[in-house]
Each structure stands twice: as structure tokens, then as C-alpha cells.
Image (cartoon, rainbow, N blue to C red; front, side, top):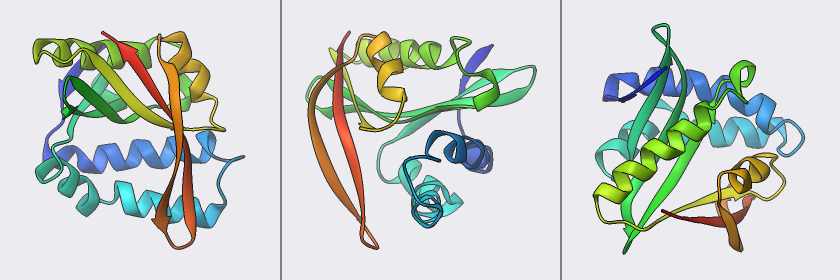
Length: 163
């Protein structure tokens, strides 16, 4: 496996990965309608381009045998000394193979090189990914409910990891 920086044209690949992961990751958490709304809001080509061009999110792809199998997006110095992971997904059939951990380590190395001392992220409070992040040395430092429109809330933990 290797990790490479995503280009604007990779937004199609990122969107395709999200559309494979979300039905598995959120099947017992979100309604189909909310899932479709959020996928469009966050993973349409236009939304991804906006995140890359305007919001300061950088995306990296995990690649195995010339196939993209996961991605991470983050924002260096989201807050002073803190890099925020905005997205991290690995295809369901190869989760537990260390790819997500490798993506976190990669982001951490980039953050450290930019003099950031922590990684932070939000994760749905009911998602099993909470355990994955705890295993990767993140701790819960708070929670928040974020209104994303259409009557939907993201019910998240805020997690932090010392680099």
C-alpha cells in the first residue's frame, strides 16, 4: 500500500468510496433519506471541489494494486497547533488491515512537520469508529450536535490525539 495526495480529478474516486462505505457504516444510525442528503452535501463532486479549493481540506488516498481503497482529509492548523481530520474512510471489505491507522499516522506526520501537536476529529457518537479512534490513542474531549439542514443533526463526539 502507498498513500498519495488526491487531485481535484480524484473527487470521483473519493465520492465512489464514500458511497460504498456509508451504507455499511451508518446503516443502523441514519435513515436512507438522511444518508442520501449527507452524501450529496459532502461527497458530490462540487462539494469535494469546494472543500479542496476553498476550505483548506487536503485529501490523501490509500492505494493498493493501483486501486484506491480509502481516503483521509484534514486541515492543518484548523485551530492553533491542531490539525483536524474531516474524513477518514476505508472500503468495508479491507477494514481491520491497518489502512485507517496508516492514514492517521500519515496525517500526524504532516501535522507534526507543520508544528501541530494534536489531531482532532468529530465522529458520530453511535458509530463503531469511536472504538477504532480510541485504539489509535484518541480520547473523547466533548460532544456536539451540529444542525446540517433539512431537520438533520450530526450527533458527534469530539476526539483528540496528542502527536
